[in-house]
Length: 98
Image (cartoon, rainbow, N blue to C red; front, side, top):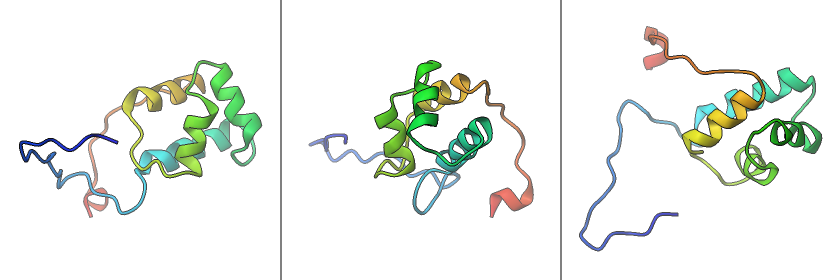
């Protein structure tokens, strides 16, 4: 966790990026793991992602079952690419903005 700065600085709150519990990308990655390996997320599927160049098993366990709410971009990219996926920016629809 980041240290508090003594100068009163607060990180910005982005109104366009709000979620209640965990970052939605965690659910996207969980679905990708399940689709790629054909079963629910377990040690064997996470080990396969790690073996293919993705983040560590403990890192992904923290995403899916632990307290991690906001994974950092490099680990997200590494997990997706290890499973053979890449991300692409697409325009949001009206229902996405609600």
